[in-house]
Image (cartoon, rainbow, N blue to C red; front, side, top):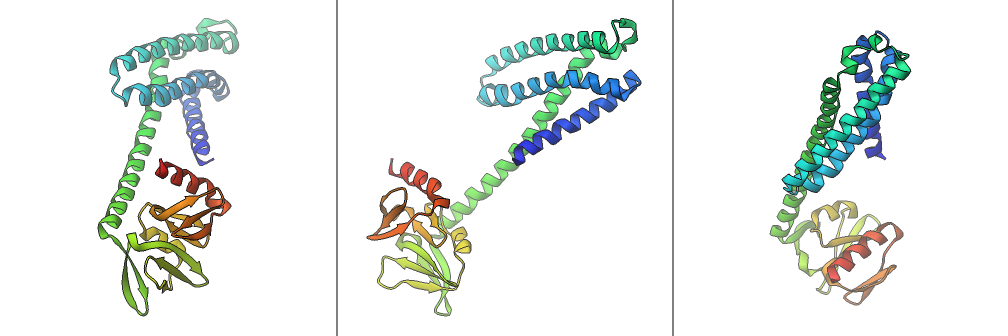
Length: 254
């Protein structure tokens, strides 16, 4: 939903910008808006084909020859469509009076520059978004690496800091205002921490399966859609986490 809203805001901004730009050409913002409405589908189609097909499928995969060939095809097709926009302007906005059209509107070269400015503006926006996503992924991977290097979970239990090796943990249960950490030793460890906070301290192979349970995915003996077994203990999988848990455990088993 957020992604759709972002796209809508971007193209609304482009529409306003072009309407103002061509407003001085037509000496009428209404005529300018009509012209932009005819040009916009060409801009949208060209932009999405370039940024969501050509770039990821060819340019980012270093298939430069195919990218160049298809880009030339796109350039020819978009130029052809721009000529139809000019023809539409001639018929609908100028009442078949060619002289009443500004040279800016009838200049295919100028329209091509405007069109590809929009295309590359969209590409720049996507590049910035990808850069932020890569930074976020890098931070997540770094945090995961630090957890694994650490090798243990630190909690406060019995009024002291306790280090519990990740590999020794079977599952963690939320009980009221404290958590119970069940390990492969005899006695569970109790700590006054929230389960939503403790999951952030655990490596990726620990899975939240229920509002009250986190399990060590490496110790799951068997599982179904509704529950799983960890060292002889059966735990429920809630509807909220069912799809993600089953997907991760199925991939891990393969």
